[in-house]
Image 1 (cartoon, helix red, strand yellow):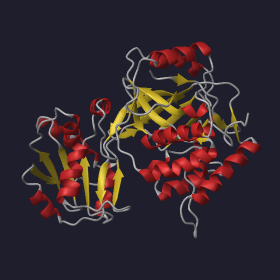
Image 2: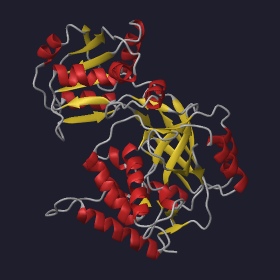
Image 3: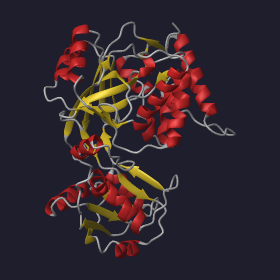
Length: 437
């Protein structure tokens, strides 16, 4: 049973709806140093100061920036720049956006808190692997802040769309956030109607939730719950719940983009890599697209996969005049969850191309990720990376099937687009973010 609950959000108090883009940001895990710095400079109250502060010269580790984040939070609460809502609510959230191919879409979701449960013990399912280092940082930051500072993006399957239909009524009122940033229009409302909240809760009670983005955040929330319990907190308190943004899988705006790999340090030339792949792939060579026309590679990848019975197809580009499309063979059996994971395009990409053929370095800074084909090609043309490998997106159905079976996909298997905005609402579970009473 998935337990969804309204909550008293910690929010910016004196920012107009159209100004919320200045104090919010994308999630920390898509930051580059340049993106992080741009949000620092956008507004002195930008949420980046809480979710991923800078490490200053002479500092070793995260203690300094965590300490500064906690002080910022205390100051902002004391000054009234951020305050808790008076009553619990759900927060309907709409994103309007344009895909790389020009398709216009909108995705409807809502912010709530969801009762935490361990993987495998209930109805909340992960689909990607996690790593200890990010969770250690989040545990310190969130634990000392007393807040789930960033939302987890989850999706559920509810064909009647009861929750979203009920919450639509809130959109007749004035939004509490309404701004456009990087091509996405973000609009947020607040709904504290008990009848609507009860209907939304009931519509998800017998459903399963799949984590789209935020696996590290979810697992950190579990660790914090256990730590708070160990300190004597009673069951059912705020730390038993975590912040989620929930969307219906049937929503037309549920989109997964591919995550292209930019290989900066490889141990094989393109010719050597192609020779190593000859037993498993047919190679089709075509002229490389001109700048501004790289989106057609995504169309070509989808077409070649369809023409070859759904085969794994990759586009390899090393900066030259031509691209090579690698058309996979020998997909093999996928009857077990392990075999299904191994047969995914993203799994084959890493096992056979990135690691097997190129022997690419995975050290920090030696491999980068992007959903933008123009960026992938430009980085290769200008010598920032040795090779770019493009692939088709992971199907949403595969995410659900593998997650329900208990499987874990490789890191960066999915790129749900657009990203949920951080800073629109915060879930306070203890001081200093929450009230001391």
